[in-house]
Length: 576
Image (cartoon, rainbow, N blue to C red; front, side, top):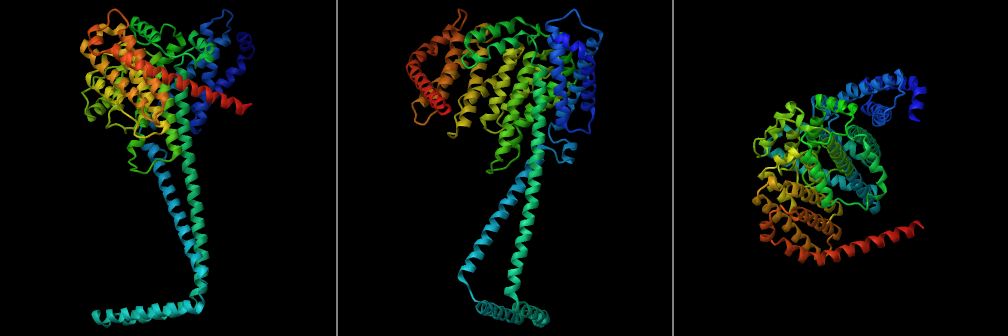
């Protein structure tokens, strides 16, 4: 057993914990080294501290208790402050990061500049090579070259004489000296030209190699920076993942993840459970050690740092003002991965931590200023929950980011987690926010790229689910019939557009099926109970929409299922 194993190896484990703690506090090490050491500590903590809290043992020795204290102390007093300082350093372009040339904006600017110079140099080399080949192909004799140069000299002499008539004789001596020099040069021009071409080629080649090395160094610095960001976010996500029975249930059901889909019953159960919990997130299964870590995160304002960090990366590429020049593929992929990891991290934070009790003083002024600058109402920011909500709302503002649905799909994902996990957040949804969500719900793809369409479908699915949470049966008393009607109209409008696009060629049937499925589920959840707004249901003809969309929806489902089955059989044949 784990208890028997640790009882005999506790001194060795304690020594390892001490060394890892020293590595984390040693600022001469790289961020990646310190983060990997932190990951090792958190892995030990999960096995030797958190899992033992779930299944306590009566045979704990004094050394084991000291080990638990050491692991908890390292987590709360060393790792959490270290993570805070890392996010604080990289939030924006701080003075230290700019001086070290390690800010994301500086690295991307360098990358774009060097890439452009190398591209220009390569084009110049290609042009020079073409000219040399054309000259060699003509095989012009040396005597002809000398005659051509002599003719050019005579033409130049005529021009000088004309200038002398206009400007006087002041140019005589200077021009005579120049003529002597040209005469000396022309005698050996062919030979020197060949030698110069060789030297210029070598010089250009050397400059190109230097630039390539500089670009490689910048790319590596970018990878190191992005890698440390992703690893730090993963550590915070694991800190907030919990260690209760739910994790074991998730592992048992891992094989059935693809078959299980979120439906209205799941939504109702989650909202009902959240409503009964007046404290916000479900902390009933939180162990004492987990709560101590959450308190340490709150004291260090780590969640506030991460939400600000999230906003910086949402705004990163739009703020670069690159015009029509696309960012490097490496950068686009890394930014997408950072946003995805950050959204997962924030989802865990809002699901496990009691945000309404947290003070948001350090960042309250910042988010209020941002909201006001973007034309929004003056946001009241008094606690962590309000800070999170208004930060996320500010990221949906068209002035805050581009129309790229990739970024907004991650933002709406966190907003959905917040509404599901923190019931008090439902009261923060105001009319301007609803209008913005309705506008995004009707947004269509500007092109047919699969990646962009996938992000757009994800964003729409999140918004549809958010509207379902706001107007679910459990929340009927919290909103008026007018709000219910606005939500209903927005959902039906999106349902009609999904039906219309489904009849268009070259349209992704998967997206149409997903959107239709989400809307039907939400509408059934809103109007499936006895306390729903029946007058809205009748006036907006919800039943008629159901009847009109179901035949086409069934056909699209069968089409998608057939295509998926064919793809699976082709894949099985290739493997076999």
